[in-house]
Amino acid sequence: MAQTTLLQYLTSPNPVLDCTRSSTGTNTVNARWDVVTALQDWTDFSLETIMQSYSSILLRPIPLIPDISPALTELERKIFTERTFETVLERATVTQVSHALRVGWHFRYPDKDADDAAAIAKGDKTKRGTIIEDDRFSPDWAGIRRYESTNFGYKNLCPGATKLASKWSTSAEGQERNDFLFPLGQIQTYCGRLWGSRYGYIITPEELVVVMVRREIVDPGLANQRSARDVQRLTASQVSHTRTFSYETVRSEFQAMSLDTGSSFSDDANPDIEYRPLLWKSIPWAAAGGKFLTVKLALWYLLMLTKTDVTIQHSYPPLREICAPTSARTVSGPTEKKKSAQERDTGVGKKKR
Image 1: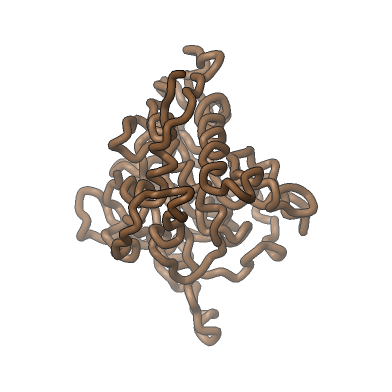
Image 2: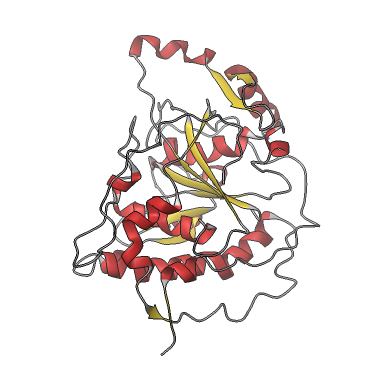
């Protein structure tokens, strides 16, 4: 019988997309999205970290998994809007990652919770039910599990947002756009304020950007002074140069570009949250092969992490400790733990690969 491994499956090439006619312009924005104060490299999120925790699962022989059927057509691979890109994701990436999650979950939890495997679903399946739902604050994608639900749907354990590469990119050129920070503020709001989940992502036809949200500890006496905080990032061409945007300036741009700002967050998970710099890591859509961190492997890993504590804290243990190898009965991979580089600030505008 033909065999493969989850690593081979999750590092197989993504569909080749034609984005020559993708729409351009500004990204959707809303004045009530939380402003990103700063960005920091998520150096702890790496292929090495994933393999230290899951090598025995990822390298375990499994029956060959059929290819996407029917195959994506040339017309399906032409990307015009976010919806047309989501068609590709639903037909290929999401289906593949969710299947790999079911396989990996069974190996990781063979005695219990095997039927509670995480999956990627449309954000519409997650509802909090505490206020009138507002579609503008509904993530495009959700990380869900069978037993993590609300009275009206599932909990979103890993929110995701779809963007077009023609509108948003972590490239040097993309970071020069006036609206560069807005999608990051969007996903930070989904994770931090709305769902209280530390993990999230933005996916485009060119890259996957994974993020980790952290809470800032603010003295009550200083809370009223937070309106003066700055938004900082570094250009890719000159890392030593800091571009600073005042909180009020960014907020006013949100206000100017939003059609309606009347929705309330009063019943959200963390209505008064303040943030530390947002941790982020970019993975190229074109990355493929077992020697590289790929889009599907990164999404699989994020969703595997939803079995652990996803609540937002000021700081976290290294990822190697959050999802350390299980007993030899299940996983016999490496157990050596290295000091995390997660807290090292390497500059915001540097291209991450």
